[in-house]
Amino acid sequence: MKKIIFILAFIMTSFVMNATDAEKTIEYYENGSVKSKVIKHESFSEVIKFYENGKIEEVEFFDLAGSRTGCWTRYYDNGSVMATANFKSNKKDGDWRTYDVN
Image (tube, rainbow, N blue to C red):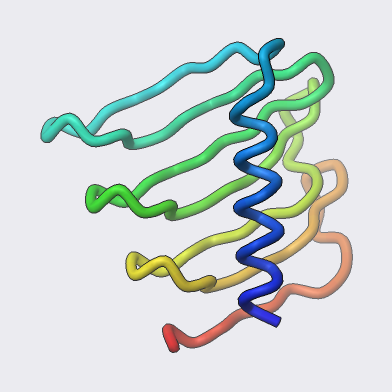
C-alpha cells in the first residue's frame, strides 16, 4: 500500500511539475539544494518541501483561497512515506494514515 501511494504521489508530482501553464517559486537552503517549490496553477497550488538531502519531505495542495485541499503526504528523510491524509477546505476529510520508517 505504501508503495502504491508513493508511486501515485510521484506520478502526480511529475505530471504537475511538467505542466507548462504553472508559475513556480523555488526556495533554496544555504547549501544550494532546493528547500521548497510552490507551483501555482489556474485552480490550485502545489507545495513541495524538501529535506536538505534532496528527498521530498512533504507534498500538499491548496485551493485558490489558500485552504489545504486534496491529498497531503509527508515522507521520512529516507524517502519512505510517513503519513497521508486528505483535506477539504482546510479540514481533514477521511482517514489519516501513518507509517513507520520501514
